[in-house]
Image 1 (tube, rainbow, N blue to C red):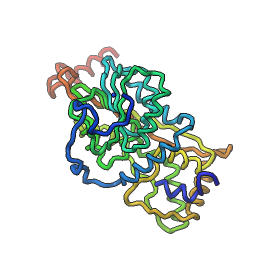
Image 2 (image 1 turned 90 degrees about the vertical axis):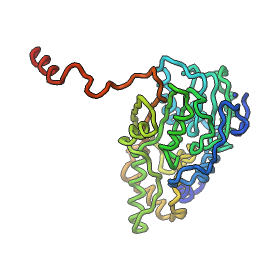
Image 3 (image 1 turned 135 degrees about the vertical axis):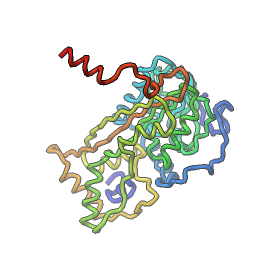
Image 4 (image 1 turned 60 degrees about the horizontal axis):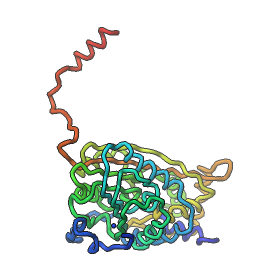
Length: 344
């Protein structure tokens, strides 16, 4: 079978245009803090995730644009059209870098764009794809860096964009705090992350198959933030005027195998530290069979749900709207009720 067996694929589940290292960035953008001051919480294997993104970069070469990824990137970038101000300097982090750059199309008034990813191969892919971008008015920089240790100087950018990348950080609030720190006052943070309902069909199928074949379960799909947590994440990171929207996308595949291949091409396969590296062939086949049996349509396709949480937050600035002080209201709810009652 081209692309490897089902078992092997499931085991994997679970400013000029040049490549720059952090030390070669202009001094106004670069910081050299100690990388050892990283998150104490270790859920994901970041080295494995880097390798997965290396692989995704090569799988993306010569392929058609990913309609799901493009839809998420478009939805995220649409929020720039709701802003009256412009963002001359922007930082784009990990995830769907290439789609964000290709679909930017002048939105946000960006003049300088820093594209950063932990994978050198992904950065090389984005740099090569720059030649096909119609909008050449943006001065683009490319750098290798990790969202968990953001090598960007405080108050140096006007906009931070992350499309489908931050959910792989071990300390999501900490990564978001670093993003806020990198922003200038009144700077904007835009992020899209996968939510907890993502791949719910695959989770169910995996659980049933493992219980039947192995008598127990082990983590095969990474944990993701819940919708109820998104607003708290923004507030905890210190952003003002937080906003959260949630969309669900249903993508149909010819089989569970095609779904796994898509996840590999997105760099979205399992990177848990506490993962079981061995998946029996019988369990993999059972998972595919259960998936088809429970969720398959009459035409033979199977659906996969992707829940995407869009988060918006601003770095504090005196010009921003603020909530009124508690107790400063000049009219009570009782007065409002009487007024509406009298008109009824």
